[in-house]
Length: 111
Image 1: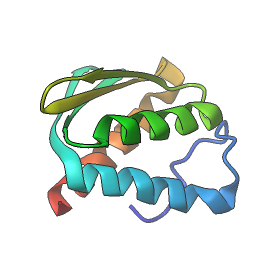
Image 2: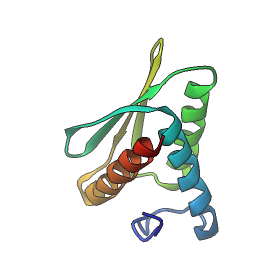
Image 3: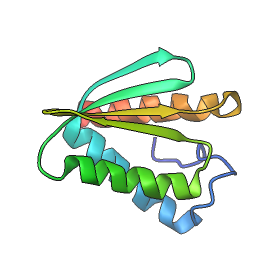
């Protein structure tokens, strides 16, 4: 999924910065993804392996992503050895969550 056509028009991140942000998410998922589930159609749950700096890395990415894509709702739950990230969207952005789930699964398989 190298094509960024799936990024919605409502994203305010400058076009030239989008590949860099996607690469940051891909790197996080390929290094840390332990499991992925879809408890509800509009929610994606990612369990990431914890470790030094992981929670801060996730919080930084979430904060920056929230700044350009306000339709995302992120919930971070740190644990002893795991950082859980839940990404939720509204119905008009369900396709966006599908694309993220597919991209996340692919990145996790590469890790």
